[in-house]
Length: 262
Ligand SMILES: C[S@@+](CC[C@H](N)C(=O)[O-])C[C@H]1O[C@@H](n2cnc3c(N)ncnc32)[C@H](O)[C@@H]1O
Image (cartoon, rainbow, N blue to C red; front, side, top):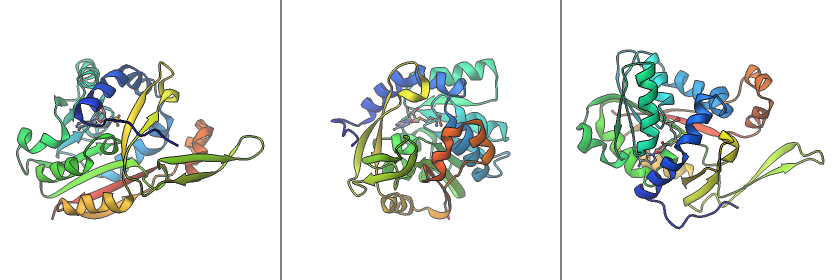
């Protein structure tokens, strides 16, 4: 059973991600986050399709992983996050290896005030929306800064399998054979341990668990149309490189959305 944190707001999210920044940076820069490098990261780049020449905002950009991916595909990128420490790491790499990315400290809820309505062709959010205290407001803010015809491309941990109760069922040798899930309909913040990702220190993240239906309605209530979804699976080559990724063949860990503004 995952913990239910007492508090989840912009200040607590900022504190948590400032604290996590060093470990997160280490994990990403050293390629230790295999579920990203071997699974959801390349899948989201493919899913985003042609971004060349587009004005793109990357929401909850962290140390800039997906902002860089999009800049390398030819987009003109602004990355925003509420954690100054995460942004310091993003800016440091931009100074070292410039891709023309601008990073700004902004709360997702304030996008329209900061950038103006209908000012971007594409908004992306890689593994960040479920880490926000108010995902519904963030989706609505993302929709408001998109031009008509614009796309909101994001991925999240899969709400059907990243549930408040979650436990692997194992065989007598300890091999994972199935995932037990529960409390799916109990929406709200849950706390996850992230120690395995960086090996530097214990990191905790707080996520807002919501049902798939809630996510769907948050998107459509923001005036967007769900054009496509994708549940990434690891390639055989990725599993050969990192055998632990095989468990991502048993259940969908992640889901990506392509939501469009009419
Ligand atoms: C799991 S990290 C993902 C970072 C990056 N997108 C990546 O793929 O590596 C989630 C990020 O969301 C940011 N975040 C959480 N709440 C936010 C909010 N309300 N506004 C902007 N960023 C937020 C955190 O600071 C953190 O950097």
